[in-house]
Image (cartoon, rainbow, N blue to C red; front, side, top):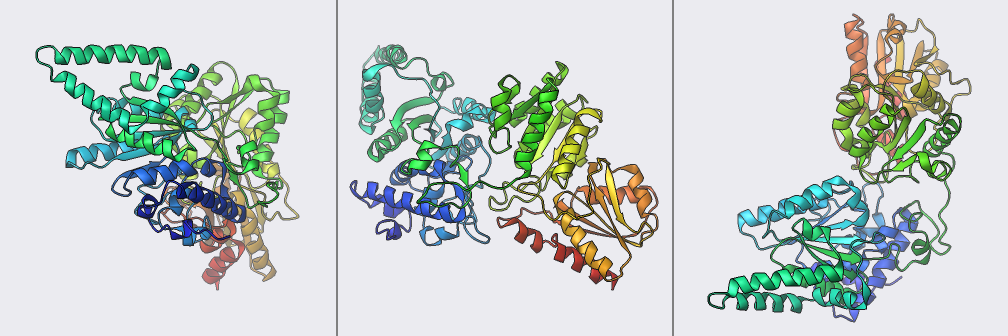
Length: 620
């Protein structure tokens, strides 16, 4: 499909040169490009389609990168990428060595920070505005944040501080695609909202205030009185507005799909001599009917047929299986409650939420709150299960230490997307949780390899272990499962000759890959055994008995090397005066880039071929 206007956009300056008639054409070309590319590569669709006109207006009004646009989460940056010189490479979106689905400074000077997690944009933009003020720059810092991110407490910490920086050049664009804030009453209020968002209004307002203030003797007092009257009238029209109560000016709501209104509002915001929120109403999935009708289904999607608009349903996966096990257990035990942080669908909790609404709690994007909330439920006699992505659990380190481990109360934390997640890249890979759990006392961590392991781990965590328990499991489906394998619910399992002098130790998803390498070695008459850890924190004490005669021990880990399970295993060996040659294969201290999971495992020597080659090189 030919995109006459979009193909000519090499930088935001080209957007500024377009006429008002050309801008809607550009918007349609952008939508067509996003839909066709996401259909091919997968990605975030509905959120990006809803932000097309808004992004065009931002680049029409502001001068990026001198004016810095900070995108919250970053799952609405596809239009931004297309308007900042990346159209020709957009087909590589989310592919290995291709363009990221989030903002990345190593891609473009227009991507100011790495994005991937929610509710941080206002804090970052406020910091930029403060730096501009100190250095005397007159540029603007713009935070673009969705209404869903307002469930994160960090937003209010930032707004509270912004209200104290009265002259900061900070503009917060609230992209509201479902949440109602300070609902206006009546037709007149709506007309006033549009009028107040135009730049001419602010020029007249500024001129009038300065003119009145210059009247001898009583000008300043009169200006203050008029301001109070205006505020009271506005509050009657608009109801109370908590943003302005926190010291931040408010404008809106604005039609987020009307480019001219958006431009007027943003130009007006530039004239406000204090932090200001521009409230924009948009429609998720705008312009693509299937996504408009089902925005949740089309939030993050795998490749699909754009013409049919039908998302292919995945086969069984760990998320769905855990949701099933949780649901079944809750049917037997009325104490079990489920907690999630805005991830009901992603973590397989839809059925639980529908069948047991009185025991289901979606706390929003507030992972830090979820852990002490679970503690409170445990103190009240319930069995709370907090289901969370590994990458978002990182926010909870303090709560895991203080409100989980120190309290030693019974709760289960189900860590979804542990290990490599693939296409979402650095900000979403779950390769760090096993390391940070290693430094927290009183916690038992299970790392199942198969669905039956997952169920056993869950039952053990609920009823057979003291204190808080963690169950970490990967994204997607089971990998290779040996025919002889059976889930026994033990802390570890040993396969092969117990007197073998070569041992493989591993856990989690890659056990199947290690087992395939083990089979190859056995077929070559190598005396080797493989130890599968089902509990990784703490290291099961009696597992060390099985390496007493081992000369070479190979540890393979789908996690980071520094502070990981491999290192703690090596430490346990030294404490027990066991000293086989120890070879650890894990992820180095780095951020692993996007790519297909099997490709990444191969790159880092964690697939069956890599495991085999590592061992054979050392024993020949």
